[in-house]
Image (cartoon, rainbow, N blue to C red):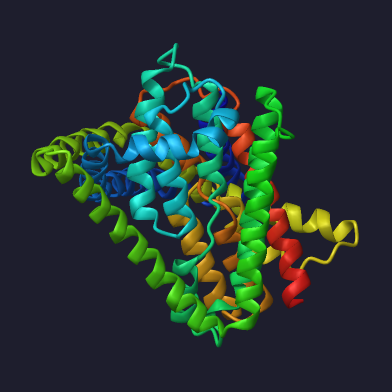
Length: 410
């Protein structure tokens, strides 16, 4: 329901701003610009879905091999003590635990192409035990917020963009990004836990969260004692070695169980293809609304208004040029990426703004895109409070990004 109101609001605001610009500022071509943005956004949505088709077919095929070989079930049992407390409505040892764990692990390693198919597989498995097939269940919301918080230990793609834009040390934002995305993830977990009355002081949950803090702390210590470029290089290599090891593990386990590996892969790949087709309407819907909002000039006016408000209260406004990226981040991943690159080109990759937009880009994932794709893949129409909790995680991630940028680079 919240997503419905946001979608309607983005479109109506775009139309109102278009009318204002046409009648008060003489921009007679504003509505042609807005309409062209709908065509571009619709095309972009289809192309993204088309691009996902091959990846989804590949990884859902791999996941089917793992399922037939019993690996997913084994992983489910391993993470069950923690997940049964974080997802109390999911039966103990349910196969969705393995898929969720693999999705979160792939995201943490920065391997988005593998994370999305695993996440969609998890959503399908959660939908099987969902009593109301049109309404998001509690486990779905918790999982989606974990995904949107985008906890990433190694933000390789952002370092690559910074290198392309001429940064002297592309990895100098590694530590702020790690901290910002960690804070976003914790905020997301807490917000959903409060809504679902989950006891975060349970010894198992508390132990895992403390363990996560120790892991993050260990990475920080290593990052401080190893050359950043070397750290980034070997982290990337390790991530893909682990991913390849998972594929080999799945195949070997399936062979030992005398599973027809090829047939299992084909069956899973077919599911991936149908999933990719199913998300096209949902993805186009959200991208069109965001495109109209941006093309109408509403985004630019919002940023300028916020800058004026901050200046009015005597707050340092050096971060304001990074706000377009921050505001676009929950709405459109490609849009935020474009704004990040544009800011680095305008201000310099090693400027305060250039570093800040990089931290913002890595602090969270694209909430509305993920909700559209993941919920759309299983036909969920009522998202309940998923958007609100996802935006809480986004807000904490973006706020942390700004504060950390001032701490590290100002």
